[in-house]
Image 1 (tube, rainbow, N blue to C red):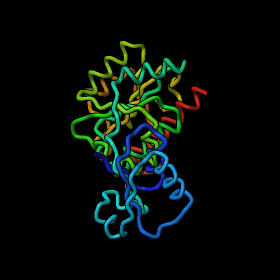
Image 2: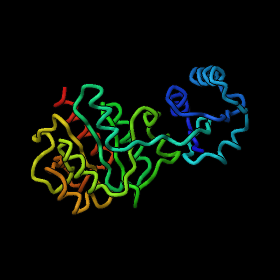
Image 3: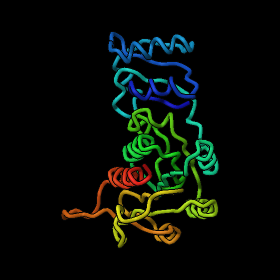
Image 4: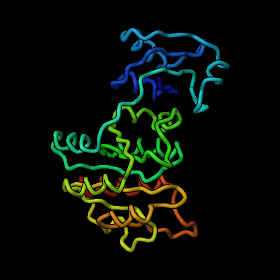
Length: 242
């Protein structure tokens, strides 16, 4: 059973395909979205329990429950091939984000939110040395996690090879790359690889990419936050595609 914390994440879960067992709502809480949640939960026959803020604080892992926590089925994961098939059924070139050992749940959630907003068809992420789908990730995605396909894999290098075999070009975001992100051709079937917060892309992952791109840095800081870097590259790809 997964915990979904916060008003927007819970509301989006109600609109998505997740099966929700029950919800805990803070006594005396009010608000338009709370009323919508209660109404929709009633339509779906979901059990509601009114509890104290103290109880919610004790249960919350995101420390930002906003007066509501839902208990639901785990997020349904898909294979990378299903992401490609989903894109093709929509009549679109696959647009995929690959995460190489992202460990910060806030970054993971923010990337999910950006990827969904920019029309990406799915996200592939690493099983080892990476954050999983936690309540903090779900909260940080602001509900976007309910509407985008996620694929958990054991070996990113193998999956990159498979994507390339299916005609997907793979671009790695790397601060040492010579080509700037806005100079690269990011149209067509594309996967963008984002590296970990501290180390960036691993050497073998870099070698698997068709090409590498960097984001120009005029200040003295060495790199951008992983979710910010992902947003810059993802939206450049969106600009080129449309």
